[in-house]
Structure formats: C-alpha cells, structure tokens
Length: 83
Image (tube, rainbow, N blue to C red; front, side, top):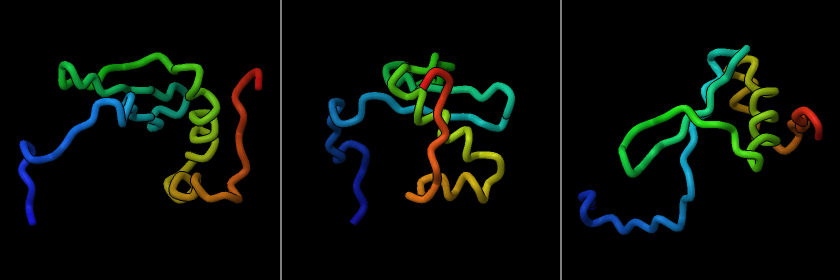
C-alpha cells in the first residue's frame, strides 16, 4: 500500500533536529542542520550535547569500512577535548 505525503502523520515533537555530519573534509568537518521551516540545509555550530558523539564518529571515519562499523559495541569511544 502506498501512502501519499498528505496521509502521513507527522509529530514535530518526535524529532528535534536533523543533522548531517560531513566528514569528507577531514581537517575541517562540517555539521549541517536541516531547517525544516525554510526547507534548507545550513551550516550549524556543534551543540554541546553532540560533541562526544561527533568526536567518536570523527575518530571512526578514517575510511568507509571503519565508518560503517562505528556503531558496533566493541568500537572503543574516542573522547573529545576536555572530556
């Protein structure tokens, strides 16, 4: 059964923000955020509550094979500065 966009229930409280972590620029990765109000993707400052996660992801993105395994439980954490 196919659903049209009009028939899909949306709950704005379910998802707070949608981010894209662009690591192709290894020396200067970018965090992008979807601005749903304007339908645009914009560069974003890293929120404090995402710093540890992004440090872990950056530490596990040296190549595609490593990045695809970043979520495995035996993948040791990489802590950001000051943590």
